[in-house]
Length: 245
Picture 1 (cartoon, rainbow, N blue to C red):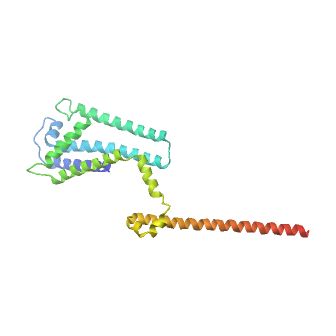
Picture 2: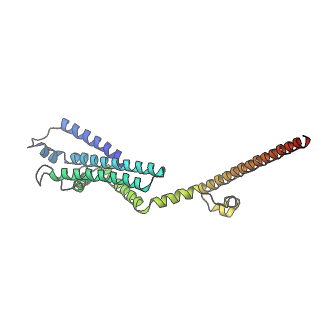
Picture 3: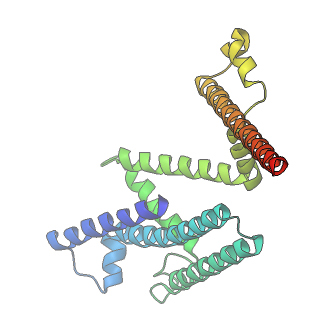
């Protein structure tokens, strides 16, 4: 989501900036950088920041897809580590390329955003916050976007820190498993009142599956009994034929 939405924001920022350059009359500037830094600093910073975020996010999407596919195929840890380290290497190289570009900037220490990719992001965030809280022309939607995005990142980091593969697998196994006393719980009104609707539906499904399994077991036993009786009848008929002979 972060990758796709970032690229969509790039398209919008770029389209609006091009329209502004076409429709408005700007004062003469010494260079393109002077014009951008003076009149289009926010749009320029936004396009660069969101484009880089989108590319890095797309790389993360590729890693996540590969990880989920390998996890579903029960692949070895070595193969998962190979996919993870390869993706990490590409991410490090991309961040390094951006860092070099930000560091060189316009060629001087003044005509640049900073030394690293974080300086570019912080410059964009500062400009966006300044525009959003401008008293003359406030931007409540811009401010809301910043707050919501910060909350989204906090939730994501919370999931990454607190949840692991083991806890996810335990949760999946717990959801797939059925309690032994499912039928007894369904017949007990006190225990049933303590459960949620989803848990009750799960117990009913477990009971139905148990009954279906019992029916299959009885059918298999009946088929085995029929086969044994047929074999005994066949052996008896064969023995009577030998006696008559």
